[in-house]
Picture (cartoon, rainbow, N blue to C red):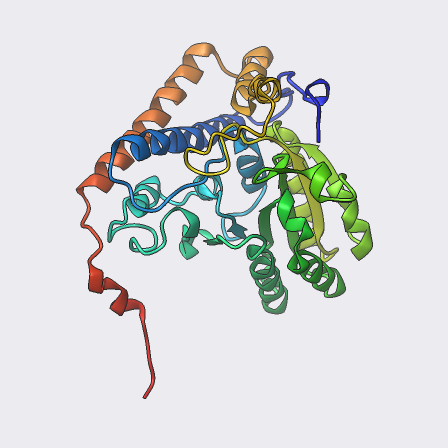
Length: 335
């Protein structure tokens, strides 16, 4: 596990990068953060169904990866998938309506936080079972190869998933069949309450790629451009028929594992050190230092992101509740 001394805090180096891309990344990261911060408040104050898992502090991974993809590329997510959906342009109103279990939600109110899906956006699903999205993305990559579509499939999963058997089976299959797949380890240092050092004999998780003859690399997961560049190169390889890539993004979840879990197993100085390496603030500092944006411009984007989430909440609260019999609309049977 990284110590406080290993944590990088410097501004993102924005020089030479496209202004439109950078400001879109900033907006998406803010929307993801605000979506989850408002959810936290709503779960404290409103009658919210189900539960949620936040990715506060991890936004650069989701946004950096998806920004390097094409709109028709596909992704699979985890139980901690709000930021992935935001990055993939799943409508905020549909996501929020799903959180309220409304009929207008992205899964018609049937899935909740841990099963957000939008096939129209290439978001093939958030999966609550650890590692279960990995074979789904592998299948999507196989489909893309068979169809010759030029698409890439990406699977997001946490450090805990690399010790699941399906991780190894899927990576072996992807390498064997030379599939256009990218596997993203969101190494936030903990699998629930267990550190990587306690759960993995080889803490350098990206090194596992060598067992399957594919590239494996570690990146600063709190530097959105580092994530973007690594993913862009992996996507380029995949589209050229050069097979899959494993990327380990080192990051941190600021909040506990789920909902209001206190996460007392983490040293307070560790949490504070990572808070000081906030990926949104690092990007903002880079935008200012490079002269790409002014503080006033960034404040406008911050206000717009907050307003977008407020609009989503207002919309969700006005939607129709799921009825007990609605599930019948999604069941088919043969005599």
